[in-house]
Length: 172
Image 1 (cartoon, one colour):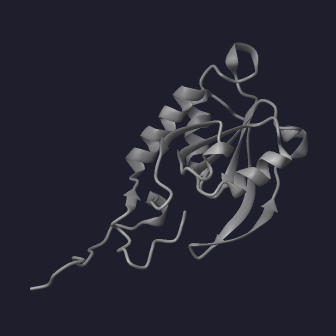
Image 2 (cartoon, helix red, strand yellow; image 1 turned 90 degrees about the vertical axis):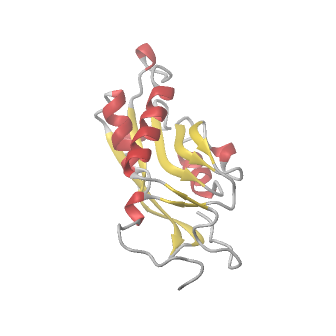
C-alpha cells in the first residue's frame, strides 16, 4: 500500500474490498492456479502465507485447492501505513520450504515488490501469487487476479469497521 496523497481525500483513489470480494477474488486465484503446480496432476506441495495480509487468501486457496500443508513467513515492511525497511520476523520450516519448488507463496497485494523480491531470493523456485497487484511490483508475481494503479490505496476488510461516517463535502 502506498500512502494516500495529501491533496486527495482517502476515499477518492481508494479501492474498498469487502469480505465477499476478497473471498470471490481469492477463489478466482485458486481456479487460475488449479492444475498448474509442478506435482502429479498439477498439484502444489504446500502454501506459505506472507503474514499478515496473505493469511486470508492463503486459507481460501488451501480450501479450494485441497492443500493441507500451510506455513507462514513474517515480513515487516510497513509501520503505520508508511513503508519502512524490510525485516523478516519469522521463517517457515526449512524442511517444508526447501528451495520453494511446489510451494505457493501467497500475499494479498504486491505494491512496490520489495517484500516479494526478498522472499523470492529466499525461495527461488516457489510460485508467487497475490490477489491484487500494482505495476511496480507486478514483475515479482507469477499469478494475480486484479491490477490496480500504483496510487490506489486498497482498503481490506480486516482493516475496516462498519460505522457511521460524516459526509466528506458540504454540511447543512
